[in-house]
Image (tube, rainbow, N blue to C red):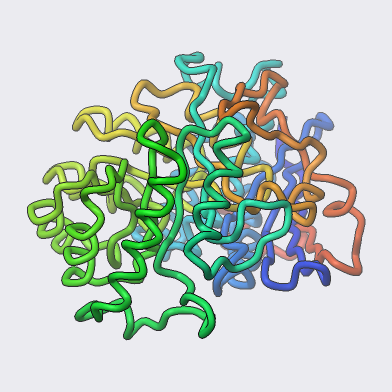
Length: 409
């Protein structure tokens, strides 16, 4: 069995212009195919990821898709920019790797978690993620303190016993809008700190003592303001304090010494080499690698195993297409240090759901792991055939340079 071509998709959905998913399908000469994702759909960088997947696809034409370690190492070591390459490069590798593991599962007729060592976790605990967007089927900014409490209550009424919010994204009414970087760095003004604490307090009062609250920060803070904020919210029983500042091993060590709340980070930490210093010095209690940016199954399994050595828990970061959900579930099912699964509000929206064939949603705040072969998820006809909203490039090796063609043999 060999790889014959790779279709690379860049979604430019006119109904959802802020999100630009980058997806791929790897084809083989047996008719088996696998789907993958470079999870850089939001923020800036999806165009680069779209090109990165194409570049890497050129390297694997003619190779055996079951040789995932060989292919991963080739992408990482023979491309010059792969080693310590950062988010765009590792996202491109992730898309390829996820699709290869999808093929591998289908080839052996088993879900990926079987190939990872078998199911340790089946009834996965889930948290409702990013309730500052309202926790509805459409995403919108939440400004009023009571609206945070209402969104948390909606999630709890659906069976979730854990919720996450970035309480420091949007200003309160009537000014509304978003806080600036200046608002959240160097020093927190008393009125801003008071507003965040007011929101946390309202959510805690609304959900009671038996629902976990995760505080998200999206790296908007710096060391000084992260310490300020952590101390202010500590009485409200925060489960963990996520991305307190720009990911950096040295500042993480300082924060771990000063903050008495478990620290989490990982969606912007890539590959085992970047994770290693955080594990060695104990500065993270929860690691959050993203299947679609951290190197796919081949790499994330190594990160999870390394984390287990240091008693670090794993919560896979998931904020992409429904392929990201399926990939996260497969990985989390097979690791002993799983703590909780992230279900982002984007997975409630129709514009996201339509990207794939199946709509996996938790039931009473718990997820069952898909048991279909491979990922248990596939790209939809919208992605495969809608050329008005989705750009497609097919890589089949015909335009490879001599060097690329030689390397692929």
